[in-house]
Length: 435
Image (tube, rainbow, N blue to C red):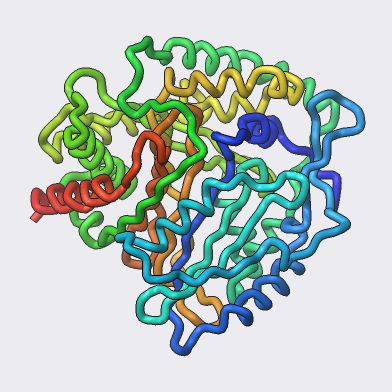
């Protein structure tokens, strides 16, 4: 399979790539086996399955004609085992050796001269558990698309076969006439988004979550009971995502107080990515928009924080995912590749004028997934840090838990332990107001 053109948004993620701003997504996935783990066997299974996934053999190739364009092309030297390695955790003094190792792994940029993905099989976890660490460049796809591809690495189910088939469906290529028509019809909408971005830009002083970009990363993992999230939702209203955002708002409030930062004044603002896959044809590549959501860290009452989150998200939903400043991924999709090559990296440095952090919720199916028969129990997604952002947060609802992955700029946030604890305490405080 070859020749699929990168969209404008795909190219934007490539243009943002840098030593201190690697643009790959990640996930730390933990399995509970019934027998002793043979890491070499797991590696062979993964390599055999990766060899059967056409998307995983593709790399970015610059277009021969047309400045700034690029396409996906099969790598003639594709070698699946070269993308898969093993690691055994030792008896470290760290509170969470898996998070410490994963942080060292996630901070390493991917080699874009070959297919942009990497897998680690990590053993040495308590009770015989093992973990798979997966990172995949954001130019490749978004979070939902990444799961569709990664499903082919797990033990096969009818549903995963369906996911794999959809993941191979190429995006419908538009004709030149079609692109001209789209440009004309979308000109007004593009102008509206651009105008909204300008209006939403905030003046300095700098956000409390801003930091000079760094190559260092720190990770943290938190797990919440889904039953408690649903209890809060049933008592106070809103969606599960609203409740998760309220929990994270409370955690950020307490974390900032612990760091001696002021929480009074303006709220923090999160860019909340929104999948528009159901609205688009095809399933490859990034298909995203976003909302800008005010996080009311200035409010002490957890229920009031949830109400403010609901109001902010309801306004966003009423306007729709292709309007407003949060729709900047839609605008990026429609910008020609040469413009991205010239301007996106510079524009990315101003991300802090629009938002303080990215908080994403990755949709996962309600299935019993396994690897070599070992049950998948925990999955912590990781979102790349936007330029000059100190923190990015990703959540995934899987089975009976909400799994939250924290990724921080290691130079600005040397330890995520206090933030992880704040997430747990914030969830408990909101739940106590619901019983």
